[in-house]
Image 1: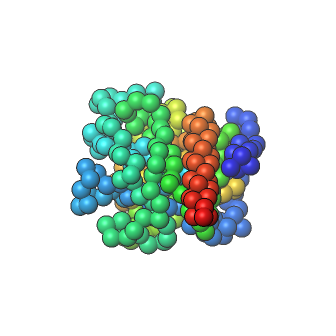
Image 2: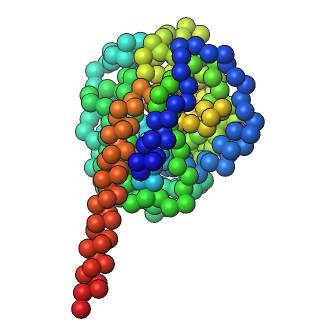
Image 3: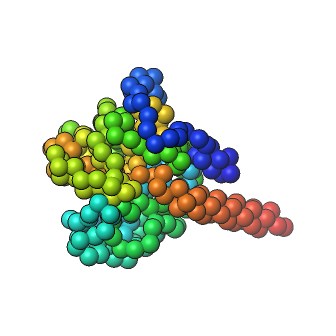
Length: 290
């Protein structure tokens, strides 16, 4: 885990401006192979099996998932209104967090949360303080055990995205077919603008920690990552957007803006791993005692 933390904090870029590079075809092929690192999140609301919400997330450590805050908290409204300062114009958007034991994580390319058995469950969630989604729709979910055989994706925590960058959004919204629960990736999306900004062409209003892409993201994609097509790193997670059938006004939260939260999440995940190892040792000692 320490080595992983050092890796995600490694320098990936610097400066305030850069020349926009063309997408790397080899990296695009690599990203297709690494899509297993995008997992589904099923949240049981009010303990009712009939009310399971589907979101997406990125496995960023063997027992740690990056997702959107609204995927793991009780909603107050489904239509947050935010300004370019990241301030809500319609009050709180979220209530209390869902009990972690009611949050399941699923692996595979085709997931049906209403019938599939989760591969792991949450034990802890971490997210920014406050009850609004504006500029803060990000969360980390610590799992009860590591997910074996699933690709761990790296986050770019030390450098932001830029307008004109090419990213690959991945989520369980089913892509163009909109088959909810099918993991699909957009071949390429372009970053249209980076906050703080208001895009008059698309209607997007972005806080300082947000950016907008052109290609649509749909129900079930929330919390899924945007992967940089040059490096393969996670640079943002899907927060909210306009219609699934139109381009523009699809808003992501930047992960580099929450580097300190990510570091705290890695520490929590490492402690959870240590506790599991201690529990396993105690169980082994008991079984070996004459």
